[in-house]
Length: 312
Image (cartoon, rainbow, N blue to C red; front, side, top):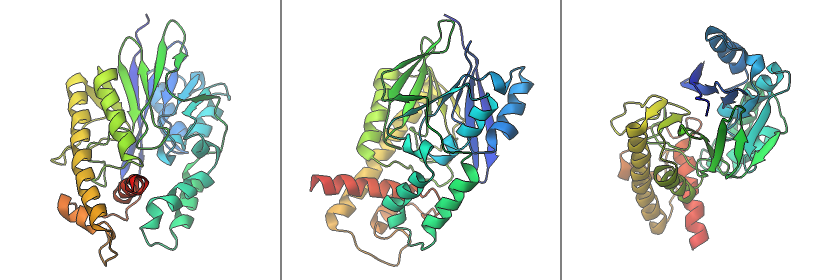
């Protein structure tokens, strides 16, 4: 089997570094695409520096549908002469097809708690600014598929929903290089809190990565932080991968316990910026700004609330 080199491609965006990964296979692939400007301003120069051409990319593998991962997909596809095949899980495909889907996600989840009359308009403006174009994916996946990148190189697809309904991991078979986007949150990134739409699915996805996939190398979508605030890099070896996955599970357990206790006691509106989940922030000692997009605090709290309501 051909050995596949992996090259991180980074482009800045506000408080975040946006990471994509180039798989130097016979049919080259890029995992995740940053925002609209990332392909031309970040990826193309980085690939040129290693003697590769962005025009030769033949696969665009999207780990999930958030704007900082799919925003550059249309632009990258255009730079390949529309020859690259764009892959995304069917559950997140609406976020590639339509900017309006991102506004709907906001209104149906964290937007319910942020008390921002301009919130939907801000999200709509962000989608116009950073999503390079709406498009139909070439390949829809559910998990369990194998993609051939030529020369005997294959990539297997694992469904690991939780962060979003359509989050997936791509695994280079035989190398156990695993690309998870934002599905291993640890303590979160710049906001300092882990964000996931479905806590039960998130937990199951982490266990699948730990027990079944067992990454030799784990590639993260952002430099997620340990308990002490120090960030991992985006390229983790096997030991670091086990640590990050287990810590993510441990953190979710603590957040879940606090959230369920709050929900059992009954939600109460207060003047707290964490309302109606102020007891959760207090219990966890969380003092970050919960209104700062992408607002992982309220995203996760809404996930626990949805689960609690379904059980009741």
